Length: 464
View 1 (cartoon, rainbow, N blue to C red):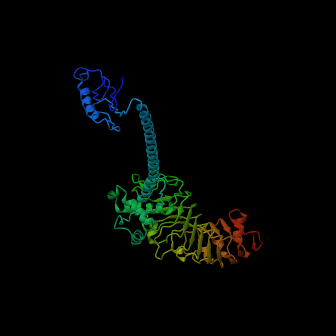
View 2: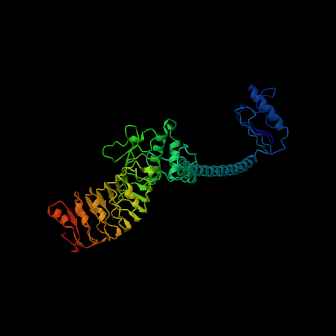
View 3: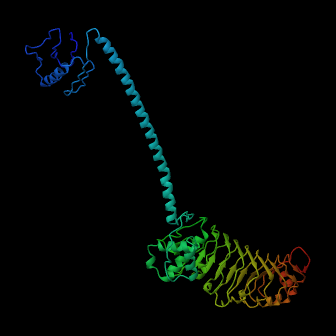
């Protein structure tokens, strides 16, 4: 089909529209309308008629979508011969536009990819930072008691008032002074107990004392066994103990036996153990405890056994006056680093039967007080810096079975009053400066096999 110059071709419509400037007679009905009676086609035809009224405008481009699903492309035609050149030029222009469009699309994709990468990096950063913040917050909110009191919080715990008015002034001051103190941490634990309001005052002090002991000796989570310790739902009478019979409370649920020997305790002995405790036996031997031990006073009068041996305690230990009613029977502090002089107040402990201070740094004279404590059965003072001579009052200890003064600087002769000790089984004065003769009565007991004598390698003491 030939198209006259200035006409507009319509493809996809099924007919040729009016061409008033055409030299060729178009094939259509007598009224010059499309044989297709489709109203959509008719509408497009009218629009095209209007466009063809100005054929001199060679740049007219009718863009499509006159009617749904129809694409109309209007191409100005100057001549039949020149149409192909214009078509080639238009095609090149179109190709360049497509290339530009492709570049734009590619640039858009690159931008979207960059944004996506940045978003992923942001999400990854949040995924790392947020858990760390949450963990730090959790560590500061409380203490993990059932395993180990974590207990290295970076955020100070919330200061709480004392859980009860019955607390000792010293404890109240410690709670106020330092939120990380043993007393403050124990106070926190007490206030977290859902059963707090159900306890008697004695029970409150008992649980608080044991909580103080826990925080004072397990700050670094060193305990070998922690079974049930610091559980709010388990009675303190069922907390772990090394004691052979496992019964650590009496019939009234009063905590009586604190036996954690060899359990890798590390830290110090809290003052609360003496202030409030009803403990009868305190055995924390063979651990890694340090510092000083609480003063033996009226408040500790219920103690019967104190075994602090084989630790790293140091300094002086003191005994308050006026403790004639104290129940202490066994006092063992051997193999520590205690120094100073042995307190003379020990002489006023009427029930004392066993004292062992071997392997410390005590100095001065051996006190002349052993005749006062008539119940003494064992005295071990070897391996100290003690000097002077042994007093004749030693002969008044009628129940004495063992006397060990080896490795000291004691000098002079042994008092003959030692012969008066009917139950003496061991006498050790090896590696001392004692001279002279062993009393004959002791030599006779040795010959009979009733006495073990330790005199060292020298010949300074006869009959050894």
